[in-house]
Image (cartoon, rainbow, N blue to C red; front, side, top):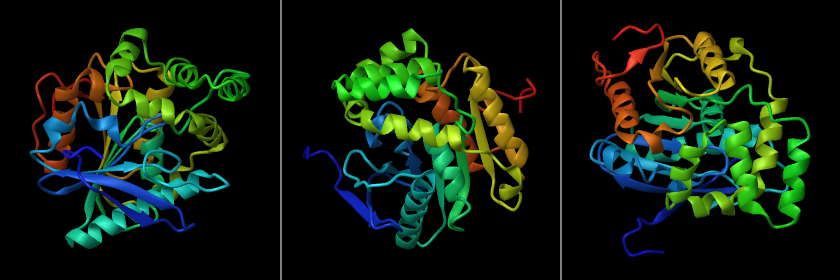
Length: 284
């Protein structure tokens, strides 16, 4: 471990799997849950903007980084993992914590909110609750993995499923977190399968009485935008904020905008950062 890297902490999830995270910054606790292909290093670009305001507890989801894995896989286990981290951090701080989830990680965080009452606010960036991969895509990815072509799996996931355009992919490949994505390529197929088998039932979340922010890029795929609105419509007190000119990875392509929207929500301010409009198109 680099001398400048914080020590890792772990908790044992319900099925016995160790789940690790690192903590940085100062201020109220924020648990960060990354999406498919990523690991805890995913937040490096936006980290300098958040660290002065919150204590970032960046999780390695199961199957990557410093976290363990299990022989079988289910989305429910991921939700239990997030809930276990939330309970551990809340227990250490003595207060409920905020949670930020991106893409598949947002889906995991949303499900975790049904398992613990220790979440104060929940920020979700394009939860992929309706993800659909092209016909034959998973089988093709399994073939690439068998041949050791891990980076091709990551590139295909981001471009063909998440709809990340080439110019944003170039930024992601230049980011230091890219190596972690390639290392986590083996988790791609199981996570996309879990998403496609999932059926969102808004009634399950009707009693979720915490503030929820749904962030959506105006340039994201129609499927991701629809999923964000579907989730927002089912959650009491949820709000959708569109990120103008952004797609699925605004924390990489527009970190200042992303951090501004997030911190505004966590602080419960009334005004928004310049240039941000709500889903109806009106300044708030």
